[in-house]
Length: 316
Image (tube, rainbow, N blue to C red; front, side):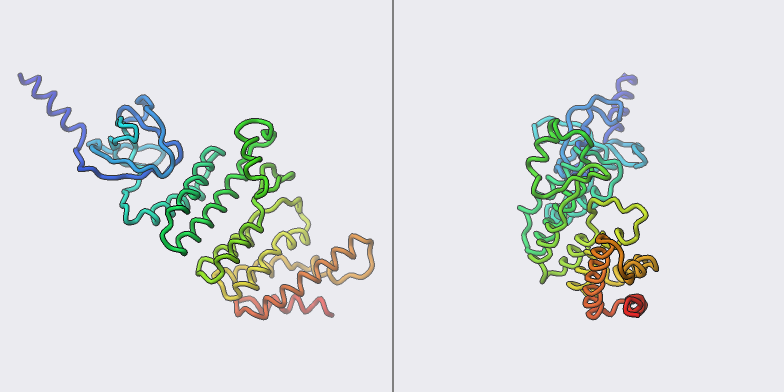
């Protein structure tokens, strides 16, 4: 009898009952285990942003992937149950759903070592979140996150895979939104998508962030050590300054232009003669500098005076 009683005590200490505590997954393809340990059989996988109800948790914490937390036994959408590691879950409150979804998407966009399939789930969650948005501000935020997720997803496109599924279907679905990066591999999202979104929500506070995302959006280039090329790649920041002269990133944009406007760039813009390529480059540089001057006239950002002094050297 003592032996049986001891077994009962051990089993009761193994888990802690919960009262329908809701959780939401924060990673793609989250593994559901048959027991609260990583060595246990995998029951199924859950998509990013899946809401589950925890009924019990392990009595002891575990450390997985540098995170320490409990394991939670949850009810699954198909009626089964399984165990999820708590370090990859967040407490779920339906009244804070939009905030939680935004938090999860933002975190996954910053995560390292995510592959093509992981990034697809981020994109899909952002897309679904748009349809749930209750205000125009929230909708604008999720539309931005969707585009950032697309850019992130495109960069993970594996080289030499265009003829294989699912990559062949991906290209067909997103051909109008991306361009191949023949230098670095993969694809880049077309920057005009972000500028169109900025125009759509220009009156909202988030327009500043959208415009900066457009200015920073990576595009194919083979600049290497060519300073003029790097300056042209950053040309979108002129538009940012023009649209948001005193925006959150105005000082950063001015500082970056100051660093990009090197002596070599000024010399190449000021030279005379040269072949057709040199003349075309000089014309393009002067056009860019003219637009930059107009944008700087609107801003009061730190570093403006120093940058204008550099631009003045072109007229000497």
